[in-house]
Length: 252
Length: 368
Image 1 (tube, each protein chain N blue to C red):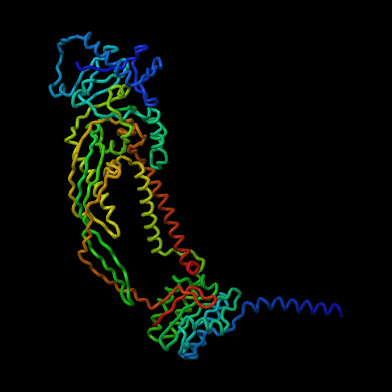
Image 2: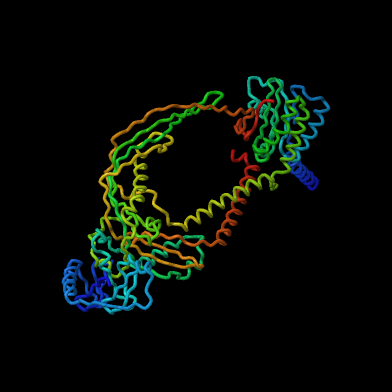
């Protein structure tokens, strides 16, 4: 009898320990596709949901695509934070979530990484993502925009930590290195030269001999130049909510 | 034959020299020290005796004569100690006899208009010049190692270089063009207002003892590089200070040196008055008119240590201010080291840039 009870208890313990990681890795409360504005067909929704669910589970980071009909007196970033909080996104150990929110009312969008997702989606990566999904938003092709978003998320997760040397980087780094080296060796070379004419005779000024007898400052004319301020639809780099990282938002 | 001057020790009869460390004449043979004034008086008495006794006329028949042009620039002297013949150029004023090494001074070079008004005696000796060269080579990364390690100095000589010293009051009328800028912006534009002003300044400023090299044998840039000299150490000229050193008399006249003095005075005057133009973003001299008044030129001998070296067939000359110790001289460059350092720094710089780009791209969020 005692042996049987022990076996049942051990089995229960084993089941409990085995279940904990399973629960942890499938912690996906909020829906990954939230189409409140009804911009996607049911087929598109299903296909996108399947893909984002898989990706979220694989990389332990919620990948969320949202459409809303209105921002309810909030801006797109505030609304993203609002959704993040009420929909319980980012329930992974380190609260990771990346959300693309689209609102058709005033054609707003916001791309926000939460928690440690900022590591995968720094502003430089966000800029590339925006270049890819924004044209679709402008054309009204919301599904393609979300697909581009999903593709880029996949790439960002895959590429994270991988050393990538873009040709432009190499050229830029080489140019900077060469210029710095030239400046450094020219400074070293200039140390070898110490023979030069004196520019003036400042060392031989008679102390206290300077006497200014006339001072006149005459205004002649003035010119005004104006340059347009740079326009930027996107605003990046702000922090919002409790765990939002540097993010981007704008209009399409 | 021209007249030579040697200073003999009244105790032992040896040739005595000016000692820069004790600022007196000192006999290297019996270590006796003499005040300048006492020696000068003693020397005057000896001079009078010499004038009475030395009535020697020489007649020589030269074998092959000098070309007239060559002969014009040569002077021949006879050493009073050993009778050796000393040949020098027309500007040589003090040297050492090549046979007995006694210091000799060509008195004829200091007669009449050629007599210097002042002399700054040597304060630093030959060892200080050697130390100066060592310090000068220190920390020069591109200096060839072989030049640094081997003793490549061919000769070190202490020489009194002739300088013209110009005193003048500059009466200046200078017009500058100056600008002030203001920045502001509204919702759409950034604005910059640039206001232009004509700024006039007039007044006087004085310069004293502006030196200009009076020897054509000395490179002017080398002599200006070891400036400044502190004129408070200058004393009235006495030939005794030259004993033990080389000296040249001037061969560039004061008149020929004026243009360089004017150039330096003009530049410093413009700078001095420009410093009174304040509160502007930019200031540029548009016109300056500088009139010199009370201009005077004096003739002085300044102490210089010259060090000559040869490296890979090229001559390198270094100079040290014999009063302040300021040391100058262009050094050779190791071309191999130049490119090695360039390659090393370029590689490190490129690697660092790539690392920064990589970090920014992957963890840019962390930098904000």
